Image 1 (spheres, rainbow, N blue to C red):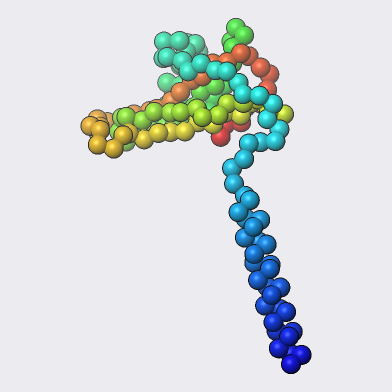
Image 2: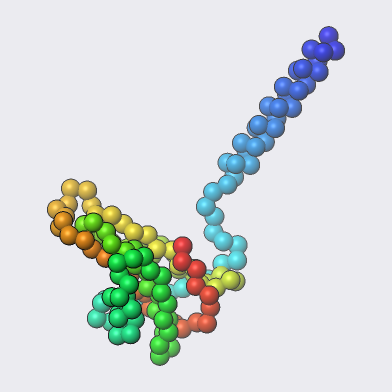
Length: 142
């Protein structure tokens, strides 16, 4: 009988351990960084508003992924390119841009062409440039 109780006790402990692990894992997920100070205001620039020096660097590197920053006249420009895509119709979103204790964090998302849309069968090179007030902070591309 003692062996049966010992076996039952081991099963109960194992079940509690598995349940505890499941609860801990369920708590994991995407959360806001604890060191976030504030959201940053920015403007998405038209091609004609991009400083010439930055536009030249983008043109030279557009075929590959790029993450660039550039400061001029009190503004910080952050550029993100996604390299060559097989078709046109891509867009880029900026769902997060904030200042944290460790610097500026910017999240960029490449959005594919809409399903059912007529697509040009030529390569495209989607990129985006945002402008904000100049800051001397490290930039983290997410």
